[in-house]
Amino acid sequence: MPKLFVSLPMSARRDIDIRNEMNALKILMEMETGEDFELIDTLDTEEEPDDILNTCWYLGQSISKLATADLVVFSPHWTMATGCIIEHMVCAFYDIPYVDVHMDDFAEFEDYDIDDEDEDDDYDDYVADTVSEEPTEIDIPKEEEKETTESE
Image (cartoon, rainbow, N blue to C red; front, top):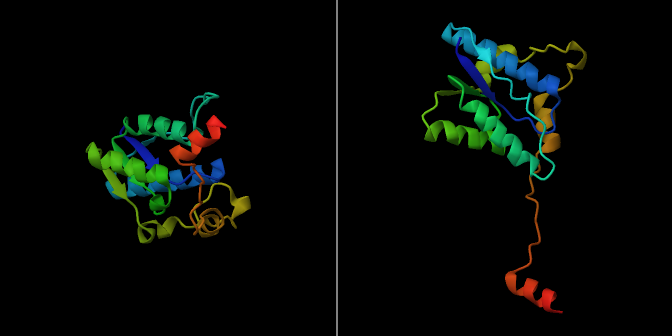
C-alpha cells in the first residue's frame, strides 16, 4: 500500500483538528487516485531532546517521514506555515511526487470532522488569531556593540 504524507500547518492547533484534516486529505487523495493509502503519522514523534530549538527539531522529524512517502499532499493553507513551505521545497528539489490541494478541491470536506463537539473550530479563525500581520522585530546588537559591552 502506498504511503501518503500530509503537509499542513500544525502550530497552535489541537491534535484532533490536525488529524481530522489529515484524514480528510487522505480520503480526497484516495478518491482522486482510486488507490488506498497508508497515512504517515506526523504527530507521533519521539520525545524531543531538552537542548534543541523544538520547531526545527520537529521539522527534521517531519522531513525524515516525508522521505518515506510515495505521495505528499499539501493542504490548502500550506503556504501559511514555514515548515510546509520547506517541505514543499524538499519535494520540488528531490523529485518527490506531491499534490497541492486548493480550497475548491477541499470544499466537500469542509464539514468533515471526527470530533462533532467542536464544529465552531474554523480554520480561518485560527489563522486570524495566530498569524500576525506585523513582523516581530528582534534587537540584535552589532558586533562592535557587543565588544564595547564585554570590555566594560
